[in-house]
Image (cartoon, rainbow, N blue to C red; front, top):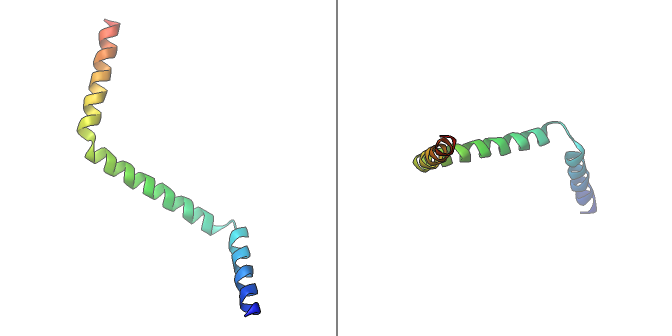
Amino acid sequence: MKKRIENVLTRARNVLSNPSGDQMTGWLIVVLVVVVVGAVFMTLYQGSITEIWDSIVDKITGLLS
């Protein structure tokens, strides 16, 4: 049992100190999730975003003229 715990701790230490692929894979997953959530948000709320943008542009052009 003690040997098994030592092996698990050794493997965990190796994974945490290994800067090669595991960290890059984690960042790629995070970027993928952010892109997918952003795309879903944009498709669901595209009308509202367009209305808000148009009102901002109208106010700016109204101030300039």
